[in-house]
Image (cartoon, rainbow, N blue to C red; front, side):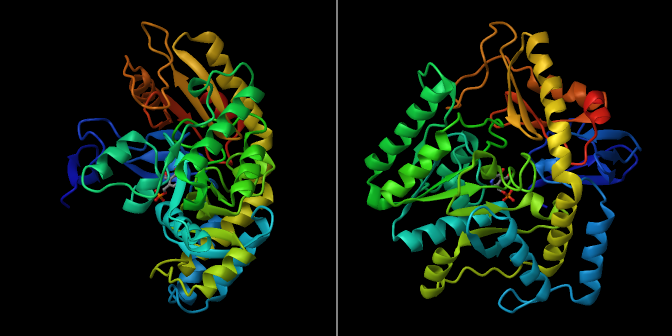
Length: 429
Ligand code: PLP
């Protein structure tokens, strides 16, 4: 493959690894998994505190999900996305039940990037307006359309080399680093006023939607200050702009409720989902909208279909995963989440290079400070450079048997174990 390099090592012959890994690094070749643990090709066990890419929410090798996929594959593995299928309809029904507020109509996609592109297209059709506003440093996908929505400088730099990223204005995240606020309430107000300013500046008639993660994912697991989302909801209503919650990471129990936005007590107009819907056992994604939006999309005869959207094997995995979440895994987040938080907060006191710890449920970020100056390395605009201890921390952790995630920008360690994790595993990690 043109974009993959071969790595030779361990007991395997030649394993192609994605181009974005340094071929000389010690990235393990994962061959098996069970619950919160994965095993490499030499039999070494690692606690998977990244849930791979924040997606294996039900843990590895969950029998119920594997069974459901197998049963579906035996019965009929694929049915055209333009035809009806019982498993697909059943999953759509379940998603409508668990989605926030009155959201009920599901448009399936394959990846989170496509789900966000679909949501943006729906918003543009419904509001007859071209722009979707997102946050700096956010990640909403890497394909051309979703990459335009993404605020992460690396992704944008890649896309902007050849094509302008259009129709996707940016606003600042509600972070203390971005505003001069003297309390969380003040921060919420200033950050929301700023969004209002950006809408007015862009021209409210030209803005179809705001797309945001309710709790940031790879950009740093940060939560909004209290009141921020309520105020955003009001602003969206006032300017007739849709509020879309990107639940690709925050959804399916990761933050302690079905969806991240549920933890903010606000009803969005659409959610997008991927990753955890099937616990990543097979690719599946989509958008859930309310009935009114669904009707407008149908009346427009807008064609959103993709061949593999709503693949029946994925839908079977989704139904089984949702049952696992409901059957105790979301409750487990409420039980072990506070323990994870308190163990991480200990690091803040213990180490000068730990600048701050932020997150919710089982999605946390440990943000590092420059080891010389003690200055925080997290810069929401991604413009500062400093001595970065993060790679060393992650590789030392790996050597001692725990895999953590890298944030974007890579100044933080993302801690995000499967929802079945135990307190003992948290202590060990
Ligand atoms: N949205 C968020 C919040 C994500 O974190 C990601 C990927 O990590 C995406 C969208 C894109 O999803 P995918 O990689 O499935 O295209």
